[in-house]
Image 1: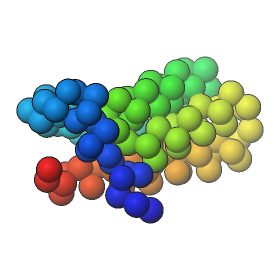
Image 2: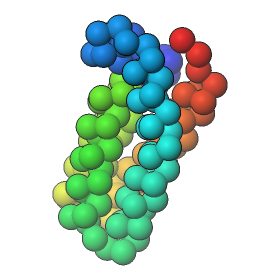
Image 3: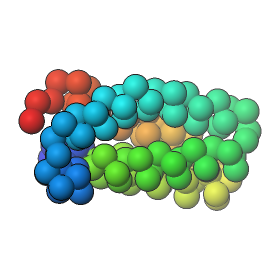
Image 4: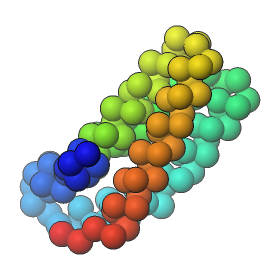
Length: 114
């Protein structure tokens, strides 16, 4: 996977009108918040709260789009679709993909320098 599929700094910077300090603040905030969002998604799925989980997946999709993380945006969208379908096998597979994508993105962001 191309690193721009994981995180596209140029896209984020463009949306922020070139403000690299704000970009760094947003990245730091994302790294702080995403583990909690993933935990809430997992808890909602394991608690059979599919509507709540779909809302969390939708939020994560938007968050990923805002930060410039297309792979997470797509996997969160796939998760939202799976949750709306109610298909347990699709939900389990999508959740695993979201976990992996979040891990890959956070690893990338922690080691990334502009």
